[in-house]
Image (cartoon, rainbow, N blue to C red; front, side, top):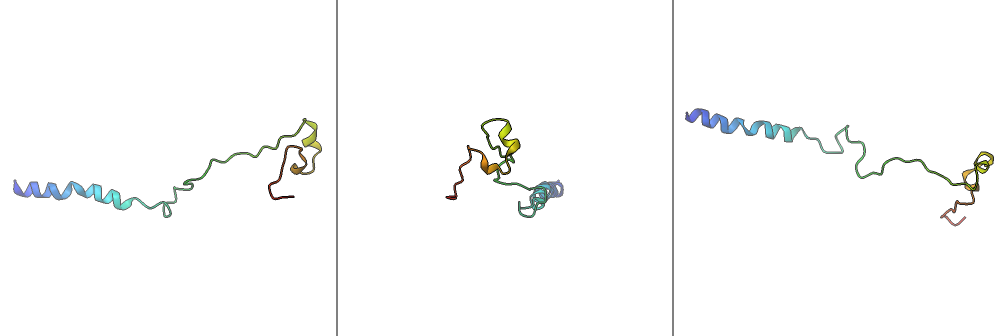
Length: 71
Protein backbone atom coordinates (compact mmCIF):
# COMPACT_ATOMS: atom_id res chain seq x y z
CA UNK A 1 0.00 0.00 0.00
CA UNK A 2 2.75 2.39 0.93
CA UNK A 3 4.65 1.55 -2.22
CA UNK A 4 1.65 2.30 -4.46
CA UNK A 5 0.99 5.59 -2.75
CA UNK A 6 4.57 6.72 -3.21
CA UNK A 7 4.66 5.64 -6.84
CA UNK A 8 1.41 7.51 -7.54
CA UNK A 9 2.75 10.64 -5.90
CA UNK A 10 5.81 10.57 -8.13
CA UNK A 11 4.05 9.60 -11.36
CA UNK A 12 1.13 12.03 -11.23
CA UNK A 13 3.21 15.23 -11.66
CA UNK A 14 5.32 13.64 -14.43
CA UNK A 15 2.99 14.55 -17.36
CA UNK A 16 2.61 18.08 -16.02
CA UNK A 17 6.35 18.62 -15.85
CA UNK A 18 6.99 17.15 -19.31
CA UNK A 19 4.25 19.27 -20.91
CA UNK A 20 5.76 22.40 -19.38
CA UNK A 21 9.19 21.42 -20.63
CA UNK A 22 7.91 20.96 -24.20
CA UNK A 23 6.40 24.43 -24.46
CA UNK A 24 8.80 26.52 -26.53
CA UNK A 25 9.27 30.25 -26.10
CA UNK A 26 7.77 32.38 -28.88
CA UNK A 27 11.13 33.11 -30.51
CA UNK A 28 11.88 29.38 -30.86
CA UNK A 29 8.39 28.22 -31.84
CA UNK A 30 8.03 28.00 -35.65
CA UNK A 31 4.22 28.08 -35.35
CA UNK A 32 4.29 31.62 -33.93
CA UNK A 33 4.62 34.05 -36.82
CA UNK A 34 2.98 37.20 -35.52
CA UNK A 35 2.84 38.52 -32.00
CA UNK A 36 1.72 42.10 -31.34
CA UNK A 37 1.27 42.87 -35.03
CA UNK A 38 -1.63 44.38 -36.91
CA UNK A 39 -3.65 42.41 -39.41
CA UNK A 40 -2.73 42.90 -43.07
CA UNK A 41 -4.82 45.35 -45.03
CA UNK A 42 -4.91 46.97 -48.44
CA UNK A 43 -3.96 50.62 -48.77
CA UNK A 44 -6.76 52.52 -50.45
CA UNK A 45 -6.11 55.84 -52.19
CA UNK A 46 -9.27 57.82 -52.86
CA UNK A 47 -9.64 59.68 -56.15
CA UNK A 48 -12.25 62.28 -57.09
CA UNK A 49 -13.86 60.16 -59.84
CA UNK A 50 -13.49 56.77 -61.54
CA UNK A 51 -11.44 58.05 -64.48
CA UNK A 52 -8.61 59.65 -62.44
CA UNK A 53 -6.99 56.44 -61.17
CA UNK A 54 -7.10 54.92 -64.64
CA UNK A 55 -5.19 57.88 -66.08
CA UNK A 56 -2.91 58.40 -63.07
CA UNK A 57 0.74 57.44 -63.45
CA UNK A 58 1.37 57.54 -59.71
CA UNK A 59 -0.89 57.26 -56.66
CA UNK A 60 0.57 60.53 -55.35
CA UNK A 61 -1.37 62.43 -58.03
CA UNK A 62 -4.62 61.93 -56.14
CA UNK A 63 -5.97 65.25 -54.78
CA UNK A 64 -6.71 63.47 -51.48
CA UNK A 65 -3.09 62.46 -50.76
CA UNK A 66 -0.97 64.57 -48.46
CA UNK A 67 2.59 63.43 -47.86
CA UNK A 68 3.84 63.87 -44.32
CA UNK A 69 7.53 64.19 -45.19
CA UNK A 70 7.26 67.88 -46.17
CA UNK A 71 7.38 67.52 -49.95
